[in-house]
Amino acid sequence: MKHYLVLVAVLLVALLVALPAMSLAQETKKDAEIKSSVQETKKAAEMKVKGTAGRFLVEAKHTPEECLKTLDEVSAKGSKTLARFDWGCMAGDHTGYAIVEAVDEAAVKAMLPAGMQNAHIVRLEKFTAEQIKGFHEKK
Image (cartoon, rainbow, N blue to C red; front, side, top):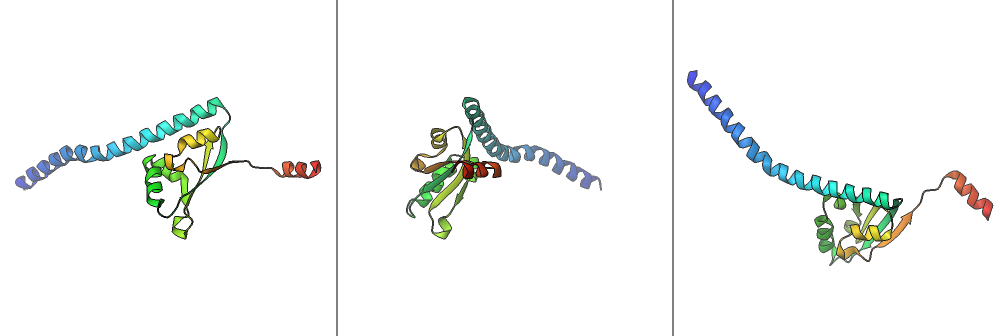
């Protein structure tokens, strides 16, 4: 019984020593993701200070041959940038679609990788029922 307790104590000590080393690698990846997220949040805050942020639709077309390169470029911008996009590639529509907040089209382009600089960018607006009624009255 005494040997059993010693063995348990040794295993616990080994675990306590090994766990920080194992979680360090995981924390490094998490730290990088957090840092990227913080940087993107700071950029968004700076944009809002400079002017009123709007919503923009991004349509970034690419060919089937450019598909993996485009996906790699977006992925290299960080997990948050990759999560913004929806892709039509699996349905044969090689286009990345995203809705982003920015002060202007130039700020949207700054968020995109080099291979997506020719993306179609459209400022989006929402309308209320009252606005739509007003449009009819101005006719």
